[in-house]
Image (cartoon, one colour):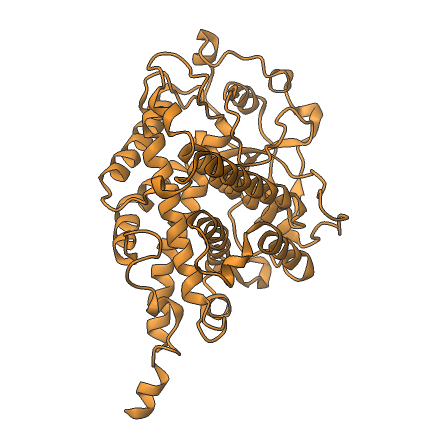
Amino acid sequence: NGRKRLRFSPARRPALLQLTGVLDDCFCDVESIDIFNNFKIYPRIRKLTERDYFRYYRVNLKRPCPFWPDDGHCSIKDCHVEPCPESKVPVGIKSGNYNKYSQAANTMSDVVECEQAKELGAINSTLSNQSKEAFADWARHDDAQDHFCELDDETSPDAEYVDLLLNPERYTGYKGPSAWRVWNSIYEENCFNCYLYRPCLCLEKRVFYRLISGLHSSINIHLCAEYLLDEGWGRSVWGPNIQEFRQRFDMAETKGEGTRRLKNLYFLYLIELRALYKVAPYFERAIVNLYTGNAQEDGETKDLLLQIFNEIKAFPMHFDEKSMFAGHKLEAKTLKEEFRLHFKNISRIMDCVGCSKCRLWGKLQTQGLGTALKILFSEKEIKNLPEHSPSKGFQLTRQEIVALMNGFGRLSTSIYQLHHFRQLLKEKR
């Protein structure tokens, strides 16, 4: 019995088994988030991201790295991208002149789904002309100035639509110096990393570090949960890799950092949850139509989105962002701008990711978080939104909407997957 107690003492227990209690910088506990997410949010957000409006994302995966010489793209099969030839892109998409609210737009035929990818995991960005015409109608003008991300130029010939359902985020084999340099650059150059040595640092800088750490943790969980376990006999098998999970989050393997990393994931979840709570009035207006060209599809998609907002409104333990940037007006403004520029710099680093699939999901989740931050710092503009006309004070592009909901969907999936890993670890005991 003594040996057994020694084996499972707190210092040696897996990080997941220590992941309990109240999170730092907010008044919410891990257990409440688990129940709320796994039973109320995850089933709905998963259905939402499968809808036509949210499954297609326009992205430029060919932008050069602005910080160091390009060291070449990943040659692994599952990192590969098949570009859509420009000759197949309709003029209407390239011109972007469709009127989203026109009668012609509202009588357009249904969106045609992407053809199935020929190789498992390869990005399929080839769409039918009907799909591209529908995509053109999703284009929206964004008047907001407070961007937290370096946005892709959607008119660039290198920008392509990608079907996210055919290209799930999972472990592709991309690792080593190239991947390490990306994350090292993010942490060392952009994260007020003195927080690691000065816990008394102001709330804003703690929040910034924890957002990046939480995003990193979430991405690592996705890779551990969707790991290439076997590719023999021409059939690839993907599933959870417990050993890989331990290397990234076990207390012994991470020198005590595993639990903190996972708690930062929960903290990031609360931040984005709060942004969705704040932006609900924007989507609740009748003028906002998640338009695909299929009236029934669009109505069902918006109904599902509003159901998610109603669940979020009922959550009793939201993060209180009012304590951020609440000091002297000039000092707070300077710190907020520094915060914004640091995060914008991180979004540019995503163009340095060598694996195209990793770059795709990195850019999407970074833009999703950047959109959440934009929302949190636009509370006054959102409160003053007109009911029946577009707002010049606050606007979201379709790209931002897709990134926001898919990015939050990734966090929701991570917390759901943690429950599965927790069960697997208990079985190992």
